[in-house]
Structure formats: C-alpha cells, structure tokens
Image (cartoon, rainbow, N blue to C red):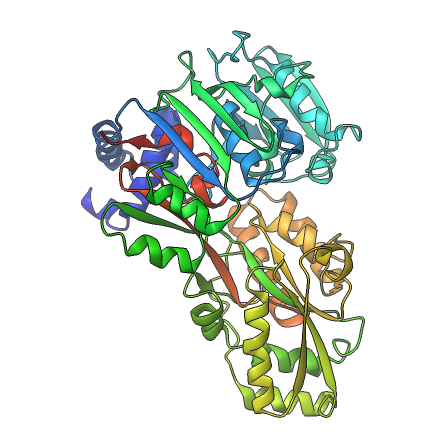
Length: 536
C-alpha cells in the first residue's frame, strides 16, 4: 500500500483537504484519488489524514475584514456582469457554481452532484439535493437553466456571452436534473462552468443587489464602490463558513492597503507590490505573504501583418533578445516564473513543461536582425503602466538591443486609453492577460485565425483544426498531446513573447488561516472568505 502513495505529496493532500472543505462527498473524493493513481485501499488512509487536518484546524467565529485593490460605482452582485476582483470575491461569497477548480486545476463538483456525457456535446447535470437559496427557495433545475440562458441574452451584457454561446439547448429532465446541449462537442464544459460568471441564481431574479444565492454568506450590506457585508448563512448546505461575518471593500492605493493590514484594520490586503512586500516582511512573524502564480502574464506583441513584424527574422531576433530570467529578477522583483512564450501556465494541467524557454542569445539575435535588415532603423516599442511591468520589461529589452547596435525606441504612453488606442493596434506593443481556466479559452481568445484578441495576427489553418479536434475529444491524453503541440506552434510561430507568468501576492495577518493557492487567481481564486478562519 505504501508504494501506491509514494508520489502523493503534501500539495496533493492540500487538494483533498480543500475539496473536503468545499463539501465534496466521499465518492467524489475517492474518484479524485483513483484519478491520481492512489489505490482504493490507500485512499482511506489519505482521506483520513486529510479529514483529520481539516477537522483539527478551523476555528469558528469572528468578523473577517479584507481589502482588494479595484472598485467602481459599477460594482455588481450580478455574476454575469462581474468584471472586477471585488465583484468576483462577493459573488463567491453569496453564490455557488455547479463546479469549482481545485488547487491542481481539476474541476470538482459543487452544486452539481455529477456532470456526465457520452459525446461531449450533450451533458447531463445532476444537482445536489437539500440546497436552498438565502430566501428559503430550494435549488431546482429551472434555476440552473435560467442562470445559464441569461448569458445568451444580449440585453444582459454578460462578460462571458461568447463562451456561453456554445450552449444551444437546455432541458429540465426533472427537478434535480438538467440536460445541456452544445453546438459542437466540448470536453471542457465542467471547467467552463467553474468560471465566476457562471454562478447559479434563482429563477426569475431581476434585483441582484440582494445577492440571493446559495452561498456561504447572506448579504447584509452592499454599497457599490464602497463596501459589502455578509453574515454567516446558518442554513448553508455545506459545513461552514468559519467566520460569523465578512466585510469587503477596496483600497486602491497599495501603501494605504498595506498600512490598513499592519494597523490591524483588515486581515487581508490583496495583490500588493514588491515594495510593500518588503514592508510586510520587516514586521516579523505577525504577518504572512500568500503567493499565487496562476497564469497572469505581460507579453510583447509583434504584429505579423505590419513591419517590422512581417519580417520573420525580426521576430526571431526579438525572441533571442529577451532575457527572461532578468525580467523575472528585475522587472518582476522575483514575483514570477520564467515563461516559454505560450499562454498555458504551469498552474494548468495541460502546460507543456517539455517546451523550454528560448535562451537569451544576443549573437543569434544579431544574426536574425541582420537578415531582417533592421539595423540603422529606430523601432518603436509601445509600453504603459496599464500592462503590468511592461515599462521595466521594455527598458531591459532596449538595453540588450543597444549592446548589439539595434535601436529600440521605447514609447511610454498613459494608462488611460491604452487598451483602446494601442493594444492590438501598434506594430510592437505590450499586452496583459488574466488567467483563463482552459487552453481552449486561451487559444480561442488569442491565437485562432478569428480570435477577437489575436495580438500578433497569427493565423494557421492547422492550428485552428487542431483546436476543434482537442475541444471535442474526451480522451485526456490525446487532448494533452494536441495542446502540447499547439503550445510549441505558438512559441515558435506567433509574434508574441511571454517572458514570465506573474505571481500575485496577498498579504495577511498570521491570525488568518486556511488560505491556499488557486489557479483562478489570488485570494484563493477569490473564494477565500468561505474557507479561512481567524485564530483567537
């Protein structure tokens, strides 16, 4: 039995512990273990260990206070319209999803008891029983259908309308069962349903300011652009939450946010910068830094349909010119992992770890620049504070270029209007992409011939066909092989350079326990309030 769990790590234990806290059944937990190669006999040992860890640590009670960095008078409790981190945190507190992504990026069941398909096109969703909304109404199939169909209504303005458009048919088989039909096969549906926007709301909801969900907290206060307060849902269908109430607001200034933490006004300061990190670390044992590298990145884009990117050797030269290690060390102050020029991060199951980053080689860069005939020119490179660390990255690349005689003219433009006026438009410019849960979503948004955010205007008929093939396959190993090859194609053929995956750092008081990394982003994928606790 011991041999069966030799490769089962403490990180894997944490995934099981997290699933237990989220209300996973024993059957679901055993399926997770079997998928990880753990024998049934050894599974009981792992579950016992994880169960003991969960049972031994949480403390009940207290008021949790936390501050994010972004807010607006347009803050919303409508999951379909959520766009800021503050929206995501609140939606995770008041609502639930059909599925969620565990620490390893694997979809697990939440409101769904099971999600099954035979052809990746027609899916059957069986709902958990005994779940009620905050107003006492039981969760039924009609609520799920209403929640999903809203994304297809243009008047709603859903942020995931294009992703939801593949759902073309909905049927209530019975009160606890929903059948979802897709336009084309997509094996990623369980993962897609874990996105924050696909929270389940009550059938017929029109007033979302009430936050009437099935979640861990009941809305007490919601003031857009100011704050929200939730109190513990005493009728919650899962164990928890641990705290009695949860207050969330935003402090946009990084220093002020950290000072609020250090003074004891809040328990968590989200997404702090490196300078603030040093301040927190200097305080000693009373505070902790929680680091998550989940797939956010800043990239350098060269449009392949405009000069100089239309010259293949210019693109090749730039890929050899970028010193990825130095960018992580200097531009990101160590808060990142070296990237390999494709968007699927190491936090994702489908990340191609065999694809090595392009080595920094100024001589090879010079060779390609000479072939491209770009020496003697001044090449504009547009950067902005709007794209995280892009100005610092540009300066590092500019210095490397100067050493071999290439002149890069770094043009630093204001954040205001950057995404409308420069991103996707300038011949050489930076972008910044937030985490997405699947390769299919990343490639569909950024690299297919018709991608809405095709930053380098990369077009490949072969790539497009491979994406459709992978999307419809239920064979995980086959999909992984296809996605591996597609990552190689992006890294070698597209005009995008992804030097690093950027880490998010949340600063917390040492009294706050239970916070874990999650592939959907910092603050435990924005769902921390339900799972953390406060030590006395």
